[in-house]
Length: 227
Image (cartoon, rainbow, N blue to C red):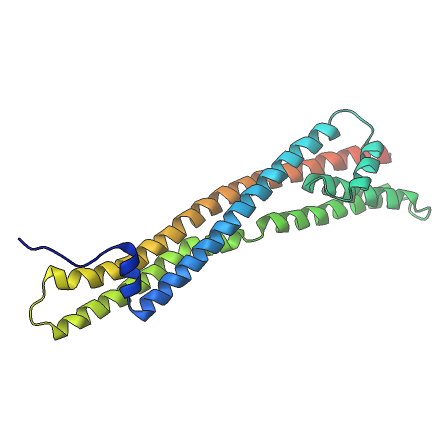
């Protein structure tokens, strides 16, 4: 019966791998740590944006005076959340146009408020989308980088057989195991990043729909006030 006496622990496989495979492993581990950092930061940011949006919508639709609401958020200097900043941008532009004695065109006043809200909306979406593309890249590229390390390691393992008179499992197993670790690390980096990308994209899209709906509804309110 054949036995393999080599130490095939995970750490040993990494330290005994060729320099190219070790570089690939180090790169994948670094990318994995960076992606986990972005995953946690993005989840906290999305959860905070969702909670702040819920809070502002309750205030907005509570039936209070919109001018009083605008005055209250001015003191917070935009710290209340994305939807609050969108509202503040629209209300500020609306007041500026209404206070301009030379501006008597109601349509131009409403268009200015809408453009200000769309610009604020785009800034908020850019902030929410930050680093999401990186997670998508890790999810799609990391397995191939790990596969490159595996292929390179297996090539070295088979090249080493040229100096061995008899190829046995004890001779081949360590080299192949070292190479397969690169694929395992690549999958370890890719799977969480891909899952997080899909989840973040779904949540951001839902927030975007809520923001766009608010812009349309608030524009209708301003239109009624501008008459």
